[in-house]
Image (cartoon, rainbow, N blue to C red; front, top):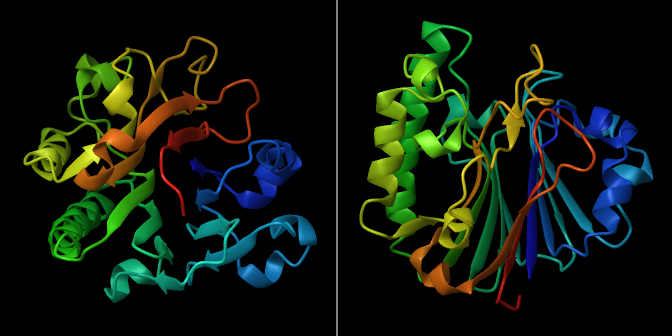
Length: 257
């Protein structure tokens, strides 16, 4: 089973850059998209719902903002939009597909880089999400939570870690939240199960020469439940083409839907 996640920074922009042509070549079972920046009625062209996939969008109420999507080869048993928390759900940041006992989720956590108000909202989301994920562990399910988490976990996960310790995305409180999430091994960073190399980034600022010099951050994850710990067989960050300021993260699992 292959799962792909990508923050598209505008699904229509990614399409113009060739994303859907590339996507069709990957033979992925589920593709998780964040930051569609579109309302579903604006995506009526067939390219935004390929005929060999079942396509699901969860839009932000604010036009041209946020939004998540799932493209599934197999029809899911159930689709869930949102966490049941209005302030978060109105921004279109969570969509879940259930296949038997497996849940695949496209998740887009907020950034706090625009100022204190949004950073406060981000911390509030993290508090809610941790409780939510702890509750989900009581279910007899396997989970793959894909998306842009807007947090680099450790120094190895961004180029200029010393200079970013006071910046949103690498704040001590944010990193500590991930420490807590991973603390008891119930949730795991799938990528790091088999790849411990440095300079494995998924996002680059559009400022300066960040892409050319590989001054990046690893903020896109597939976070899995402990039951999938030994199921990760291959990981890749695709950088041969640029569809967004993020790169697609591909992970293969020894798992049959």
